[in-house]
Amino acid sequence: MKFFGKPAARKVKSGPVIKRLLVRCPSTAKLAVTGQTIDEQLWAAAKVKTPKFTCPHCQQVHSWSKKDVVLAR
Ligand SMILES: [Zn+2]
Image 1 (cartoon, protein in one colour):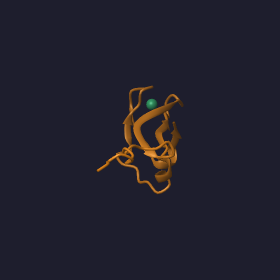
Image 2 (cartoon, helix red, strand yellow):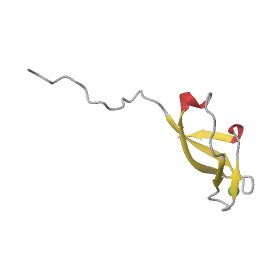
Image 3 (cartoon, rainbow, N blue to C red):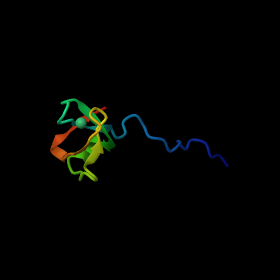
Image 4 (cartoon, helix red, strand yellow):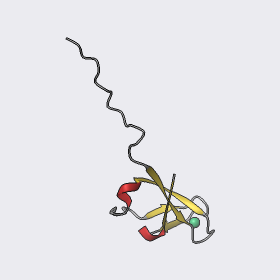
């Protein structure tokens, strides 16, 4: 009996493209990382959860909506 030839269950290179969600800070106009990520292909249909984050630039809590988001690698 041989059990060779079964590929490991790993993600291949052509798998989902994970993007980071960035939001522009209204105080400093800099892009801030929300700490959330999403598969790019799912973004169009995605619903955002907890659309608030603590901004690394101005230390305030910003709320954001989907249209504010910039996808970045
Ligand atoms: Zn800010």
